[in-house]
Length: 220
Image (cartoon, rainbow, N blue to C red; front, top):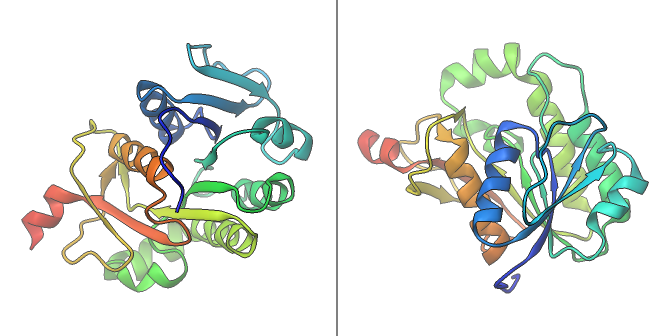
């Protein structure tokens, strides 16, 4: 398990997306230094504690520059639901080459990937995922397989639907099915959990499920 450090230097992929922005805010608020990889032309504004690295998420040279000397790498890459993009798995294939063995990684995935599929409500298993999220889940699964087979210390974080609500810092998490879980958690609370996991390494080597704690309690 990774030992907690007072201040860490973190590499961040997906900093301009909703979850990435939330994680960036949370990490900087905790006093960590963040090195974010963004494409040319990105509007990500410079901030104290933030270093911007220009490049593509599949470019080994850019990734090598990004991860040199960092304490952990956080992956929050995304693509539209109906896109044929394989940005997650293509990044994973490039990243595993440049990361030193034993590197700490916290990777955003999705509830429903691999063995967590039976935990989905029936509507999601039979209609929503096959018809609308098939490509998203497939690319997350490829991403998990590639990084999981590498000699890395990875935590896969599997949230359900993401909302834009505030961080209430009250959520349920665990390696097994969360009884009564509803399919939502805010991006802000997801960012809090991912920052906690970066610092603690509590679920290193596993895939953790995350859900709104209040929703779980109400459904119990």
